[in-house]
Length: 243
Image (cartoon, rainbow, N blue to C red; front, top):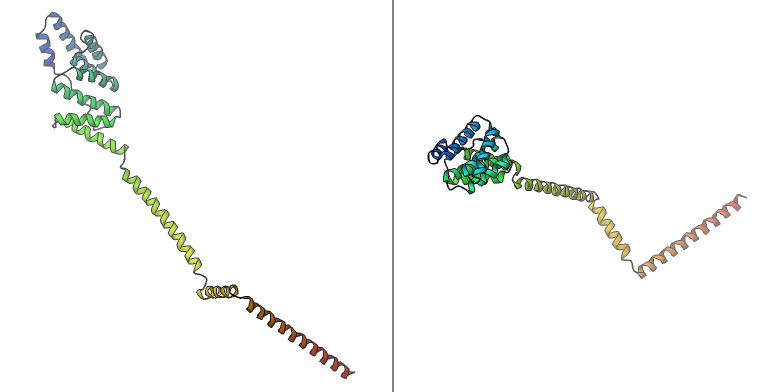
């Protein structure tokens, strides 16, 4: 991130000077080597600075300051996972509260650079609990939180989307139902009622009514036959008269 504070905390030089004054010739040589390593680091030669710090670690592998400085060199080389290992070793071997705070800040930076946002957020919070005035930690915490929100949008948006889809489906169902009801209403009520009454009439005819209807048909047939015979006789009489 362009606004990310890439600052890491380094050890003050006076710590190294005290070490030189309080030890013998060997300690003086060690102090001199440390100063040389510090100069390499400050000049931007982080690889050779790391090598120098590691040579000193061979004599004292649990030295918190040396582990811390190796971690800083690796961080500048963008080797964040390896840097975190040395920071954690330094943290486990120091009782200095200020150094602990600086180490925790640098570890949080490593987590952020490694895209481990949840871990980096917790790391910055720990720093701010002990030092609320740390502006770099506060700024980086805000950036980490923003990145977290981008990667994990609120679930309410998905729920709203699903709810909108359900509402749309319901609207379509209501529309289909309304169209169906409209089709049924196209048949006039009078015609539908007449068909219903006619069906009820046919379905309700009993045996007696059926026999009565049959007799009426027979009588109509007899009248029709009589009419035909009469017409035939009239025609024959007319024919004879013409002759």
